[in-house]
Image (cartoon, rainbow over all chains, first blue to last red; front, side, top):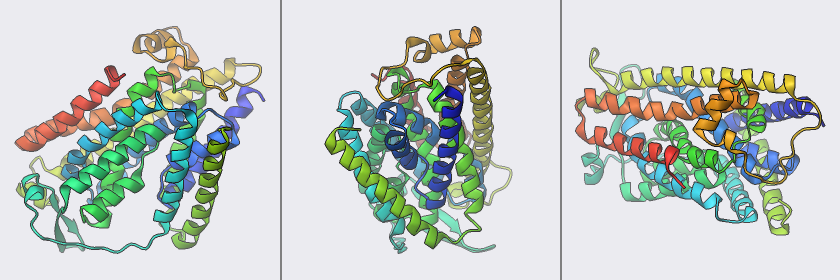
Amino acid sequence: MDSLSFSLILLVSSLAAGLLGALSGLGGGVVIVPVLTIIFHVDIHYAIGASLVSVIATSSGAAAAYVREGFSNIRVGMFLEIATTLGALLGAWLTTRVPTHSIGFVFGLVLLYSAYSSLKQHHETLTQKPDRLALRLKLQGSLPTGPNTHQDYVAQRVPAGFGLMTLAGTLSGLLGIGSGAVKVIAMDQAMRLPFKVSTTTSNFMIGVTAAASAGLYLRSGYLAPALVMPVMLGVLLGSLIGSRLLVRVHVRTLKIVFALIIVALGVEMIVSSLRGTL
Amino acid sequence: MESSKHPHKAPGQWTDLRIEILVGFMLRTGVLLAAAIVLTGGVLYLAHSHGPRPDYAHFTAEPAQFTTFAGIIHGVATLNPEGIIMLGLLVLIATPVARVLMCVVGFLFERDRLYTVVSTIVLVILLYSLFFHK
């Protein structure tokens, strides 16, 4: 295959991955890595490099839209970014040390978990108990619920949230993904922040977390320019289209279809990692 | 303190929401600029490349011209298409870093000492990772 047709096929596949990532809420990274490794037989180091760059593009590209809604909490995000960026340093370092098939294996497990979490029904468990540590760190805010109404919230269990965020950062650096699913768990489940605050703040954090791995990825030679080019442009375009479509399509049915695709990719990643063919 | 509780109130001040809107606009501009540079490099690359596609099935780290700042700048200066793509990626990687820098400045204007320190810590981690992390 020549470079032009290869680039065009990659562009179209990445566009589909970005679309799927945006509509399922999982993000482009978890979709594009298995597509590159399983379908195009790209080495996982090049795949996570291309994915990481796409994740930064998607996060920064969507930031303006999220901000307008006024749900994201800049202090909560910034405080937790200490955890995610430190985790990302560790994760990126691990990619230079651990064998390829163990990266693939962990990736498969994360895919299976992501599929499960995307289908799980969401239960809001808000508390306004004044948590001392959270108040000292100003991890509080008010969520607009109507034109003139708002709901105050205070974060709970800050150390647990910080710990989970370190894990999210490590997975991001190790797998070249945004690991938005783990970030949302940390804020929504552990810290009991409102779901809308968790998801929009998570989007903001993804780009900063990914940037913390980018330097080592660059110096380790994971960023192959001719491969990254169609992947980054495709995922960015796909996710921008996806977030526009999101308001119009019926999400529940789509989510089930997407979860099945993700499960299939996850199983395939685990099997080929164990066989050593990844 | 007050501004964090009611980000949509208190007009005319450096509020969280104002910082975020400015930052969001800047991020999108940065991404569009990065995408335009990558696309330019990509078109040049495809116009000049003939023969079979590169093999990515086996990992051999990219050469120094694409892994160091000096190498990339040299590539751009000599109009190397892949060097131009890498420049676009550097612009892209810079957008979240610029975001954190804007937050440091914003919190400084808000006289929020705690979060000036918090965002400075994140900025230091990012700069360390970009230039020194091994």
